[in-house]
Image 1: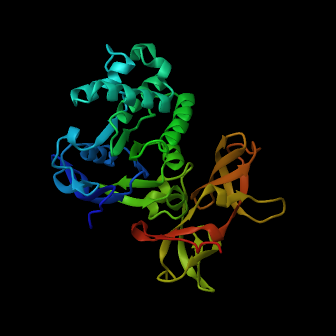
Image 2: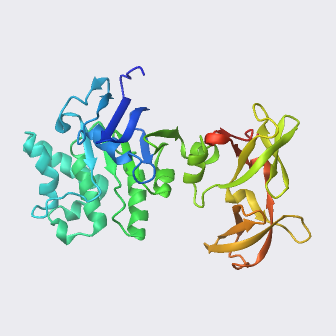
Image 3: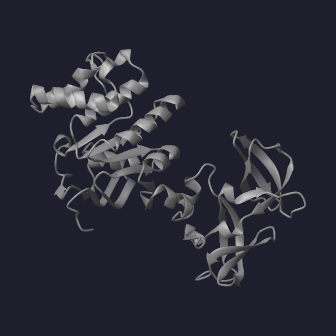
Length: 369
């Protein structure tokens, strides 16, 4: 990878803890002012990668570059990076103002400049009225703003956010998510956020980096990782509910598009190009819930039994099992009327189906014109 003159570059970063590999030859480029989310299951290495960038962990091999300068050989405080931790890490005996000033005083920044930076950060985060309070007098959301403010005053080239919303209740998390979205327009730096919450990643990030099995599985915009997952793992991991996988066999092609026979015998005429997918190949057909619906009265559909009904007010997810045992999720508008244990006839939008071959390789339908 050629080292860029601006932004962040990770080159072949590897890390093991004892005999357990966590990251293997991870490479990534992040542009200036880009908002990136590291998303993945527990143990996927996303927090370890963030800590390597920050200098809190040392990579076994590889390089970290920021704005054309190699920084993995520097101590954490000399990297031009500010990190916001999951647990705030505020000094309880200090006021908000003192917490925000502490690192700047240690760095020898002039008093007038410290006061100016604190005032500017307090204005951005709307915490001016909290500056003389101590953390114990504040709510979780306010303390998280202070932690972000302490990072802002350092005027870093890169912000690192380690699950910054995970300690907040649902209402505060929603409000703080909006504040983070606004923050990225007010600071002249890239942001990398580690999260296990897909809604945070899909809402905030310009691009999502999905990690699993010690490596990056896909890098893409929220729309790309949802609509064109790189492999079966991403397809199952991204989305709530996740993409259903129906086992089948390639039955041939029609007009250059793949036809798949499901285990129950039904044949789907997909919009996936036939190249490389020959008759007899065992595959999984991937379907998002929005591409499966209840059959209209008198309309033919696949026989299924409803196992769980998830009502969300404006829409309802029906978790069902087909006659061949395959699990599938359908989307029904509104509150829904079916109950667990009842029969349903389901209609599949075959043109929207994805196909995954052995090893999880993805084959997508042709994009709509």
